[in-house]
Image (tube, rainbow, N blue to C red; front, side, top):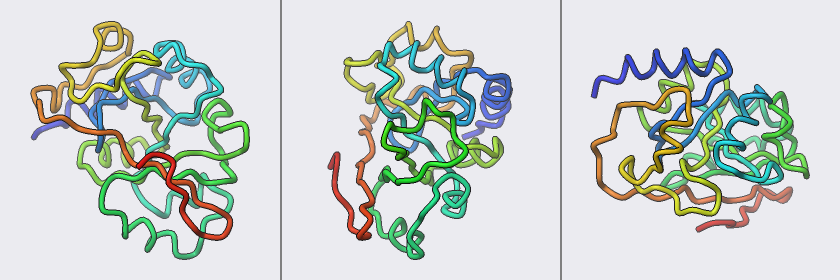
Length: 189
């Protein structure tokens, strides 16, 4: 489980506006600096995805939400701790992110990661990381590295080696919207 070199190589790509292919706490993803509009544009181009569609952002700690979301409920840490699997939450009032990461309505989809590789990567990067499925828009999301299309593998600036051999199928995160009332609306179960 030595992923140190992958972290170093990923950070080098991310810090120069590049893109990476990496294992997340759910499926394999394409990532970049979520505060860099040019890097985010590269992800949309690689995926052949309409820029009006949102991207998920990964953070390492609940307290990081305060930097990137204008209004978080005071009990957000308890809410997130109650999730039984990786869950992406859509928050209103995105702050300090690339404009092409923020939805037209001002919302942003954020997941706090617990998986070791992603958590280390985001903590050491010290910025939010884009995480979008490693597929061409409209194609099935890859359940493991073996299902990632060659044009994605070859189209990023760095493809992580760690966990490539895993064949256990994975699934995308649950997505919920945090409503002004504090209730959760399930978008993707």
